[in-house]
Amino acid sequence: MVIRLPIGDDSVDVSVVSWNSWPVLRENLPALIAQDYPAYRVVVVDNASADASADEVEANFPDVTVIRNARNDGFGAANNRCFERAAGKYVAALNPDAKPEPGWLRALVRALESNPDAALATSKVLLAADPSRVNACGASVHVTGIGSCRGLGDDQHAYVSEERVAAVSGAAFVARRDVLEEVGGFDERFFMYMEDIELSMRVRLAGYEIVLAPRSRVLHDYALTVPPWKFYYLERNRFLMLSSMFRLRTLLALAPALAVAEAGVWWFALRSGPRMTWAKLRSYLSVLRSLPSIPAERRKVQAIRRVPDRALLQMMDAALPRALGAHPPLAMRAADGFFAVYAALLRRIVRW
Image 1 (tube, one colour):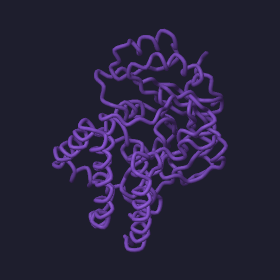
Image 2 (cartoon, rainbow, N blue to C red):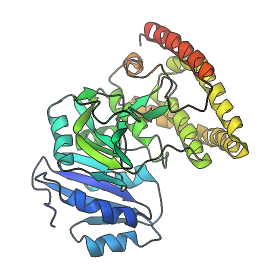
Image 3 (cartoon, rainbow, N blue to C red):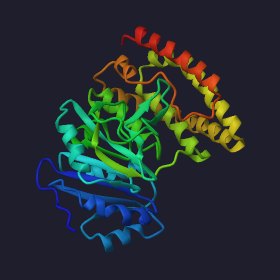
Image 4 (cartoon, helix red, strand yellow):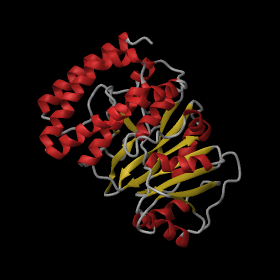
C-alpha cells in the first residue's frame, strides 16, 4: 500500500514514536497506511531501539519515513523531531500500540476544521483488550495538576458529540502546526508522561481550545499501572508544569490544595512500599536540580499568555481521578469535599 504524500495546505504529518516497538508497529502500521485522508505522511521516529525497529519499518513499509535518533530522548523530543520537519497545515501523534480505525485521521482533522478556535483535537481511545470500554476521551486535569484519562472504563457509546476538553490524550491527537510552532512543541524536559497535559495547558494559555473528535477512534493496548519509575515521572513533571504555568500569586492561592494533594500522594507512596517512597523523594530531588532553569522556563511559557489564570482553572477538575482507588473511600470523599469547596473558592478569588 502506498501512502499519499502531502500535496497541499491541508496535509498531515503523523508522528509515531518507536522504542523497541516493532512487534506493535507491524500490527498497527497497516491500519495507519490504509487511512482515507487525501494527503498525509507517516513518520516513525525511532528512539535508538535495540530491536532493529527502524530497519524493519524501512524494509517492510518503504513509504514510511523513518527518523533515527542517536539516543532515547523521550516521547516529547521524538515527536518534536517530526514536527520540526513537517510542512503541512497539521501534525498528528499516534502511539505505536494504538491501532486507528478507518476514518481516524479524517475525523480528527474535520474536528479542527469545524472548530476554528481549536488548535488540538483528540481521538476517542478505546481499550484494545475490551473495545466496548473507553481508555480516554481526552484527559482531565485536577486543580493540583494531576492528569488522568477522561472517561476511563466508561461505555464506548458515551461521549458521542464533539465537545471541549481540558487536554488531549497523547495516544492519538492532531494539532495545527502553526500553533505548535507558536507554543514551542512538547517540553523535552519531561521525557515521558504528562507531556500531553503540559502541552495542552500551554495551548490553552495561548488562547486556543481543545476538542474531542468522537468519530476518530483508536484501539489502545493500555493497562492502568503505576510502577515506581512511572510514579517518579508523573510527580516530577506535575511540579515542573505547575512551576511555569501559573502566575506566582495563583500558585500561592493553590498552596493549601497542593499541600492536601501532597499528603495524599505521600500516603499512597508510603503504603505502596519503599520503592514508591524513593520514587517520590527522587521527584523532589529532580525538581530541586531543575530550580536554576525554572525562571527561564517560566518566562518562555508566560510570553505566550493570552488568557488569565482563571480561564485555566475553569477547565480543571475539583474531583480527584477515580483511578486513585488505593485511597480509602472515606478519605476520597473527604478529599473531594475539600477540593470542591476550595476549587469554588479559587474560581471566585482568582480574577487575574
